[in-house]
Image (cartoon, rainbow, N blue to C red; front, side):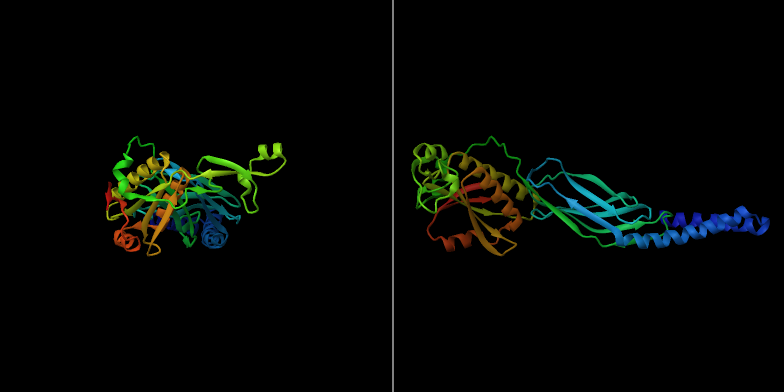
Length: 335
């Protein structure tokens, strides 16, 4: 509508000036007419020329972000051509691939000749998951607002949104004894998440990070630290998500995150089983530290964890084993 208004105003001024030129034969009116014609063609050709030199970059934070926390996507719009344009509109699509939330936004940015414009685009996710920000196109407008050109510029960035954490909820691990599984080896050389059990002489193949440098210097021989596992038992968790409602999915992951954090803080490793909608298979990982647990959450989101008959799949692959079922916001032991 605005574009049509600009065109009508330009045509009106051009016709009015032409009438004055016809009647008065003034040089000023002639110059105005020539200038308007040149301006019209300049606007047309410039917008088509600039589209070849437009660039778009998106940059997201490298670290995970707690939900309900504001973060910023850096948007950089560049113009390597020296023809000036008034504005460009960047069409962005923001979506949470884990819970399915989707939003579309249009940003109007100035397109300066030979320069780049950089802004910080604020976002805030109310749900956990994988937030993706992608651009599909840029629409360029000329100086007069008559001509516009659509440029396909695809750029994408993603940010993992983790539960906020800090829950003061406490669980009684004895209530989940059914889901405990004995670990075959309680002693692992070079484990990073446990206490040092003894120091011994270096054996070829030992990890360098486990060398006890002070003691090695004192004895003039390489000595290695051996560590114990956090626990001789681990919890088997099975995650079943009904992803029809974003709120329920979010609540289930929040509950899972709190429970896993509590277990690990009490030195009980957690093995989690989930169904991957992305790879169409059941997947499992074990977390023995807080960092492991947070990384596992990001893999859940990347795999687009869902239902996929995960309980049946688990029982088929682990007959007779008890486990802890996490479903919606419920956590219960299953024999």
